[in-house]
Amino acid sequence: MQLSAREDIGAPVEHVFREIADFAAFERKIIRRGGDVALLDGPVPPEPSARWEVRFRFRGKNRRVVATLERLDPGQGLTIGFASPNIKGHCTVDLVALSASRTRLNVVIVTRPVSIAAKVLAQSLRLGRGRMERRFRTIVTTYAEDVEARHRAGA
Image (cartoon, rainbow, N blue to C red; front, side, top):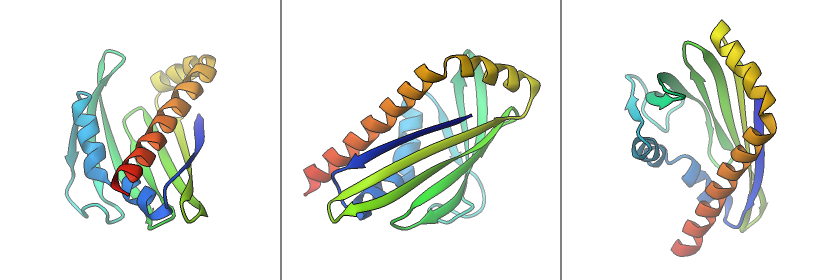
């Protein structure tokens, strides 16, 4: 399954890149929402191959995902791969400088079920795909607005 969203942000590409590469801020967001994040042994962010273990509760069950920073191109974007016992995938965030003060944010999440249970869940999610896509776009839009507001506040 693939979800994608695109937003234009009224901030320079350098600022937007700093925001998307602020891994500590994302860790804090996960913890505030009841999850648990641990940086695994190995390279530390922003080095490629940095890995995190993320634990959270979803649909009444405890989940565990290992996320790996696969690509980090300053001013261009990043890719984070993730894997759990049931689902594998990656999230790609690309940045395009539209002008000196405007940036396009492209976010694509691709997931692939691994287990039979995940395949059944993925099939049921396909039925609600439109609602899920709208929710995903809303999340990306809200994030883009927050990035733009932080840029204006700091300018």
